[in-house]
Amino acid sequence: MKFLYSRIFIKQLFISVVIFALIVLISIIFLFFYTGQTNYIKVPDLYGLNISEVEKILSEKKLKFEVSDSIFYDPEISPNTVVSQTPLMGKEVKKNRKIYLTINPSDFSNVIFPELIQLTKRAASSLINALDLELGNIEYVDNIGKDVVLEVKFNDTIISSGQLIPKKSKIDLVLGNGNK
Image (cartoon, rainbow, N blue to C red):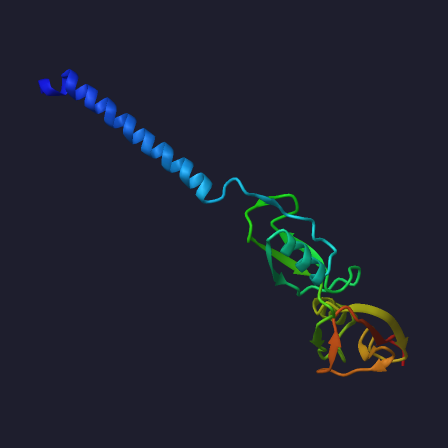
């Protein structure tokens, strides 16, 4: 027990703690530079650019990209352009980091048109909205069924269930007005 309080032991313990601290400090400094913690690249703003422009900009900055999503078509934005990106513009990343992009597809995807004949106006408009279609003009004709769908038109042509229709298309309905 006396040995733990001796000068030699305390001196050896102090030297070993200092050596251990130096080894840890040198390791941290080495790993800091080895892992490239000093080399960051700012992520550019890619919103509204098409894929070829994105590829050129990111290759100059030594960054990679991957299109992670392109499902939702927005007619207000040019086709095949970037709608969002992760990580966001201005964030600092290391070289060869992958930037995930959401692009506006080049075209609407198609939906299979459902059976709307003999449905009420309310049920038909709910189905149309659920399929990402838009309700166009509503025309009333003499028929005993008030607000019951009698015909469905797309581009002034009568359509039937099972046909493929592009999303965001305007669908016109011909409804009964309740008169004989």
